[in-house]
Length: 198
Image (cartoon, rainbow, N blue to C red; front, side, top):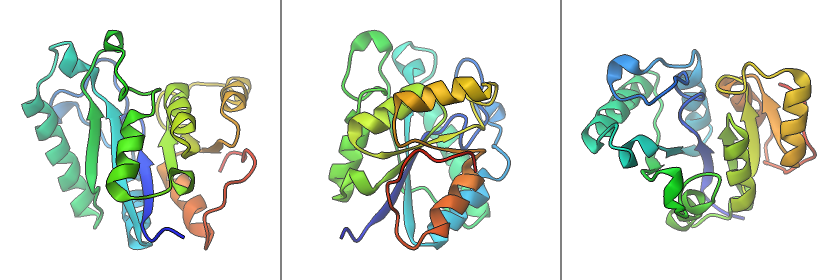
């Protein structure tokens, strides 16, 4: 049994509201209601939380590392205000055309997280708001969770069903708070059949 309990989160649409383009400044960051508190509850139950996010705006020259660092410093202040923390932010700076191993839906970021933490990814829940990220979770061997607080919020029930059918074992939640409820309701995290909306 692994000693480190770890959760991997996407960023946009899960912690902050998704916006077209990129979050290039603090003024463009809008926290998803309840997301910081959800991270705090997950932390307080003994789980480590890391973020894995595609940031192709860097590779496209639309944002730079200084902007990314400023946005993440703001995120960390919001987390701290709720007694929460994210251990680390892993990000892919490459464009889709780069065909790198770290850009989701490829599993490179998650595999690196697994190496860094020395964990069995089959015991690691990964929270996503897109099919791309669910596929990344599947490719890495993580347990996939879909939240409807980001890019999936406008999908109808049939579209969600079709998405989940492509990644068997996906659990669906209204938002990160509902995911936290699900996670903390079980003493032991168990991979199960596709779950309903929580």
